[in-house]
Length: 264
Image (cartoon, rainbow, N blue to C red):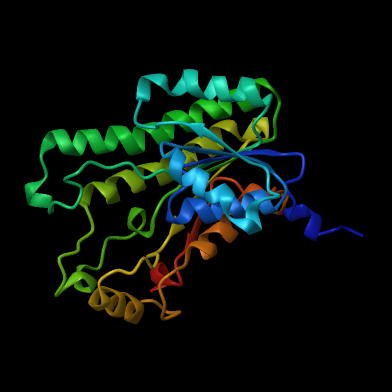
């Protein structure tokens, strides 16, 4: 009889969570570490890592920190190879870092060309290049790996701007372009590397609650079939599934974790 629960285990696997100390990243890091993986947190904030490993419930988990800045495009290949050489292998790579410029919230008509280009370089270009570099290392070392890129509901559908009414909030235009690009590059990479038994999938979160404006939260929850915003653990659980052998026949998919937002 098949041990189905064992399919979710990540024991004897090495997993990278790139951007693993943010709101969602922290929960993804914990979920993957709890599943038994040798878990590498890649981030630019060492203090957040120090705070994380001090948490009592996490003291027995195998979580290590590597400083890694995905916006340093020219250094990506060198830095990924350095981590791979140090750890001897990487079975799972999760791209969920969220770099952006200081003027990220500007409305479409006010976005400067230089800002648009920089955000695309930092976010879309880095995700694509990281996916290529880690997939090539998996291929060279005959690793049946899993790569998970983070998209968004706004990479699949347009924003409903009514949910931002009576608030100062909006959805940046570059975000939709970037996430849409990540989604389709993920499909491309899945097709390209499938014959090497390397899986590449895209996880698309809906809105995650982070004490946003109460009017926005109310508007958002009205729009969602499940009538609530998402929580980081909702996203972490789905990431664990795509990381594990429980999803061994899934590649090139776009997994919507959005409470039904894109269903209507």
